Amino acid sequence: MPRGDGLMSARAVEAVEAEAGSPGYRALITILAYALPVAFILLPLILFLIQSFFYVDHGDIVRELTLRNYERFFTGPAFLPVFLKTCALCLGVAVITVLVGYPVALLIASLAGRRKYVLMVIFVVPLMMSYIIKIYAIRAILGSNGFLNRILLFLGVIDEPLTFLIFNLQAVMLTLAVILLPFAMLPIFIALERIPRSLVDASFDLGASGLQTFRDVIWPLSAQGTIVGGTFVFVLAIGDFITPQMVGGANGFTFGRIIYSQFGFAFNWPFGAALSVILLVAVLIALGAGSLLARTRHQP
Amino acid sequence: MMRLSTGALVVLGAIAGFVLLVLYGPLFVAIFFSFFRFENNAVQWDSFSFDAYQSLMHDEGIIDAVLNTLLVGGVSVSLALVLGTALAFYYNASRSRHRDFLQLLIFLPFLMPPIITGLSLLVFFREADIPRSLVTVIIGHTVFVLALAYRIVLTRLQTIRASLVEASLDLGASRWQTFRFVLAPSLMSALGASAILAFALSFDETLITLLVTGTASTLPMRLWAMMRLGFTPDINALVTIILVGSTGLALLAIRFVGVAAPR
Image (cartoon, rainbow over all chains, first blue to last red; front, side, top):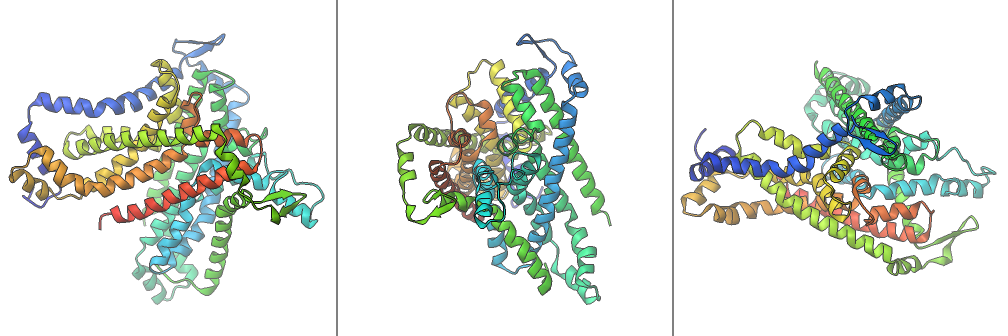
């Protein structure tokens, strides 16, 4: 390690260790550092995992380890189909956000100078705006008594309010897509922005058309960011239970809602925990598939 | 990156305009109808008033919710900043292999779907016999925003040159003085940025809060309860106030992060 100009880490450690280097002291610091994260992050997760192997009998939790919750998920008539439907729904959300987000990110990334960043902020700021308000506002627009219906009625386009706009799975998909769109745009924008101008210029100089340049230069270099964005959206969508409840109605039953109901009306915590573990496995698979896909795309 | 042809520009511009409409349209509808009434299938243009805002001022449930939200945000952000800074210092100074495990632990609540974080805390609180209250909400929010504070402080810490710390120690400053007069000043902007971002997250946190709260409600909870009843001017007024607040926070955060980013 060269003296003087390195980053703080190693040198500062030596200084600290030289001054207070006793192993007992260091062990104490380590324990202090781990105490809270272990107590409030790791321990709850472990308890949660264990809970998923308990079961409920006559309203009481029986603390015996069994696989019956997981068995019930695979053998029950409703759980596996809802789970698969929810996965398909969230995949749909990811596809919509990427299909819509990519062109917008491309447009913004092609702008020059400061405008680019200002515009990106405009598209990303809604992320920080209250999530529940967005659901509410979308519901107010799409509802059978909502503004869209009232306007169409007023204009005489329809005679009765359209009812297929809300309280079904399509409404859940669209609402989630609106809410999560900026999450997809951000990684795509970053990937596009990193493409060196010279590569694009070279492609044009060598006689490629705009479409060819996009297909052979820009898309391959931004595919990774696009996959990351889609994965983000999928992971965020699959755990949501408020959006389906607000705009899904009776027909919009998703896996997240089933889990939530186990901790509410159904009062079967162990089963809810088991379903959450399955959800987590789906998330991990999505993340793994995403990074695998991104890696294979990255190879020339 | 590149310049687009006019045709492409028009098509992409149309898509972007549509997206903006979809992202912002619903919000403007809510703001608009906090001032105007909608009756007989038409906007009553002469109904402009602040009535909805005034009736909010007299709603104790809402005032409680606002105070709860500020309390939860304030306490959990402070806790997360202190803990996140301490952990960032530890990570930065430690050379053991298990420090990456600790870092993963810190990131977990941020990476996992909120429903998992919330439910695992819920189970934990029951096993530990901690009754659900604002305290459990504060713990949930602290765990959630910790990753953010930790990450921003660590990033800044890693850009501080070792020679500065060494010089301070060589010149006879104690370690506390070195922290107070050398490290702390350059961490301030990072701490400010984390505080604003973390507060904005806590302000809007809904999924975890819903799972770990007792009878006390924060603003998003309250809003959710009100919304089940329908679409009223009161809700629109509350929505408008929250939007102004969170947009302000967002812009402040972006400015701050811009300033705090290493140049």
